[in-house]
Image (cartoon, rainbow, N blue to C red):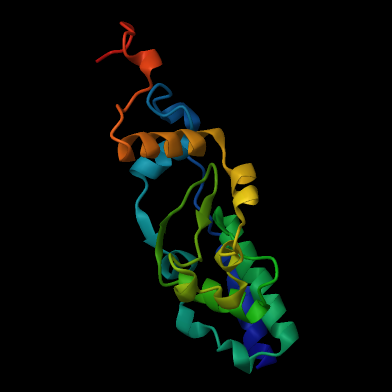
Length: 189
């Protein structure tokens, strides 16, 4: 298996040499696209990563067939490959290499826009903590803590307080706006 892992590492290194060239900012309408990545987001095609990298997910052995050292080397190389193409993962800090490896290999089957200016963050978390690819390492699981009323008041921002005031006014049948705005001629409506 070691020779196969070495070959995969060489293939990953070669894929790093094929990064698309940055768009020349002089060729872009600076009025419409003040930042190059905005132009790229609107005009670049989606690429299936396996085709772009020249690496298919099926080429990667299951994580349980790799030694811890092989797994770490492949994780580091894959992460570096994604990074070279400005694709970044928001991995939890304590997730094991096996989980990270599986997520990165699965991502090879997906399509992304490749940016030469700026980065794309790949969301590897699920909408619901129970469905998250990060499993028990999911950051969302730590936010389901119970918060007592005193802590909740402390954590509530002014915007949230305004929203709560608005909801309370609606529930109590009050007008949408406080009285200070009732006679204001500067409002556009």
